[in-house]
Structure formats: C-alpha cells, structure tokens
Amino acid sequence: MAASPRSGRVLAASRQRWLVERLAREGAVAVGAAAAELGVSRETVRRDL
Image (tube, rainbow, N blue to C red):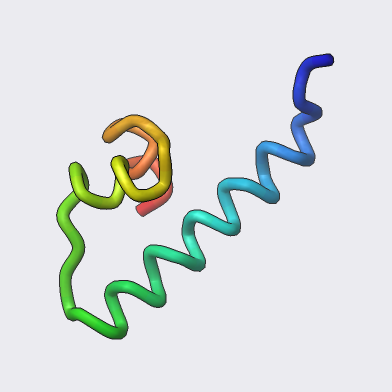
C-alpha cells in the first residue's frame, strides 16, 4: 500500500521538529549526519530545512 499524502506531511513535520530540537540544543546540524540519523536522503533534509 502506498503512503498517503497526509502521512508524508506528518513524517515531514516529525523530521522538521527533530531538526528544530537538534538546532536549539546544539546550534548546528550537519545535513549528512541528520540524513543518516533520520534515515532519509540529504535532499530530503535540505527540503525539510
């Protein structure tokens, strides 16, 4: 079964929340490290930013 567009938005919101929390805590986040930790591509992390 394919993911619905809504589930994609929920996942994106979750990743964005993770990025904001990491930035607040550490002041910076490397795209490659975030991609590896989140299990997505670097391009996805860049879009989420």
